[in-house]
Amino acid sequence: MFKQPNLQSHNSGPNSSGQNSKKPKLIFAAAALGIVGIIGLQLVTAKKNSGGQTDRNAPAAGSETVEISMWDQEESENTKVMDDWITRFTAANPNIRVIRQTYPNEDLRTKYTTAATAGQAAELVWGPNDIAGVFTTAKLIQPVEGFVDVSKFTPASSEAVKLKGATMGVPTTYGNHLMLFFNKKLVSAAPATTAQLIEEARKHTNAAQNKYGLVFFQNEPFWLVPFVGAFGGWPMAFDAEGNARVELNSDAMKSALTYLYKLKTVEKIIPKECDYDCAKGLFIEGKAAMTINGDWSVKEFQAKLGDQLGMAPLPVLSETNRPMTPMVSGRYVFINAQIAPAKKEAVSKFINFLTSREIQIEVAERLGRIPSTSEALNSPRVASLASIQPLIAAASNGRPMPAQTEMRAAWDAMRPVQQKIMSGDMTVEKGVEIMQQSALEKLAALKN
Image (cartoon, rainbow, N blue to C red; front, top):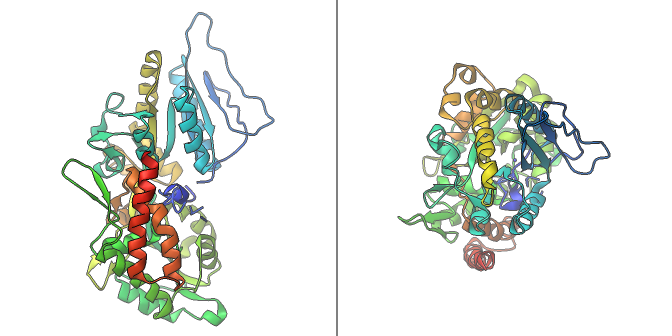
């Protein structure tokens, strides 16, 4: 998600993420609509569906202006910060005009694919990591090494957009991962293990009163993956050359699905049915003691619970003594494969501005996200932010979300089967076989 991951794109994780309902509604975010004219030296930001006028300040007489466009899928609160950054960038670079336009969720992917094929897409796209695989396969984006020094980024943030050794997106934020939230009025401290979590959750579960010890988006695979990792598996595997393959019919997948089903049918600490909005609502209303949600929900939870909000990494799975492993990614800037030579320098300047020390520190201070550069992450200003430290801790046990198209096929194959297993309409053994076959079929369709 960043309110939610675009899970539909998986996804989505998100978005991200699941983003069905982030989906929430991943992946590995709802976009703001309306036109915002920003008065600056050479700035234009544009949004869809507005009756307002866009302010396009003319360059000084005799100067030559380079115009670059960036499409994003951010929420309105964050685009206001992005607009401020663009204003500051154009003040320092008066001959570069930046036009930013927001699109909702899948619209960005679809529009960019269509426009880029016709040679009419924006120079830059700000979005989740999972679009890297699709755009790379279609040869719509290019490696970023020629535009920015990739060594400045934390290995974890850049790994999520590496495809066969090439960095296919510029990391601007890190995170978009699941973590444990708890209501301090009900739970004094975060459980360190799943055994402790279950024990604590039982104390607060009363289905007749619609109260539960734990709630989460139980039918979305973005929430399943941390359990798969804790059982020693992962939806994807890679060979020495970096080639990916889908692995959904593993013992770890079987164990994870069986475990989730038992939380509902044996432990009975989660609702019989609960999607993203259900889980979020129960937690905000104080009817759920704990919830698993993404870092994109921190601001909303803090606004509702204030000092009573507790945050922690996902617990260690007691059955294996391994920590649960959420997928971690972030937001990235992707570079059009067909940028005009005259615009490359302007694009490089803008990207380096977005990943500069000051802006990256503001990623934490103003967006509430983890910075993507080592310099900013280790700065005293970020270290002093109490609100960011739990996010960093929760991401420490995570694994980069694969950007390959194989992962998109896996999401789409996992989701309907997981729903049937959780409803008791399909056995785990049959389900994982169907998942694997469906993923291979979907992958073939994506590559054709």
